[in-house]
Length: 160
Image 1 (cartoon, rainbow, N blue to C red):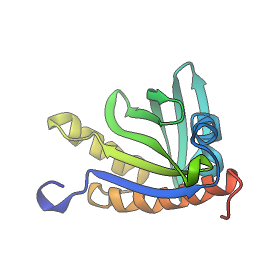
Image 2: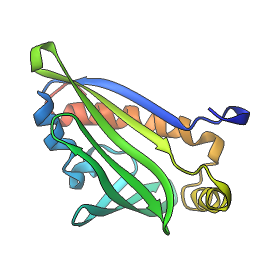
Image 3: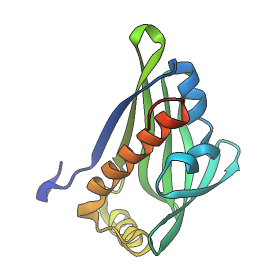
């Protein structure tokens, strides 16, 4: 947290009824994000980079993403930029549970808009493109993460 109570990091977790290696294969296939994310409606792959096309209500925006952690069965994460400005890191940590037949999936978000003029520009762009004021970003992301994890569990054969 920073001055004013701003939240810079959020995590949500849920158990998925598959071994960690199988869950990793699902989350690392970024083309499938549109199946469970409440905002993503399209992905354009470009090697280890991809462009995410997002929408919420009347707002539509895109982000450029680069995979930065790819540890099969353990963690998958990507950094998000917009117009070359750092925005966030999104990722999934996987912890085997129930003798390896289930996995605790922790989705996390770290806001990377922290420094000087880049922060100010990125926050204005974020407000214009997503309609979310900086002080509300963490709460909105937490809500979206819960939806994402429930849909991910359903896609992996678990109860929605």
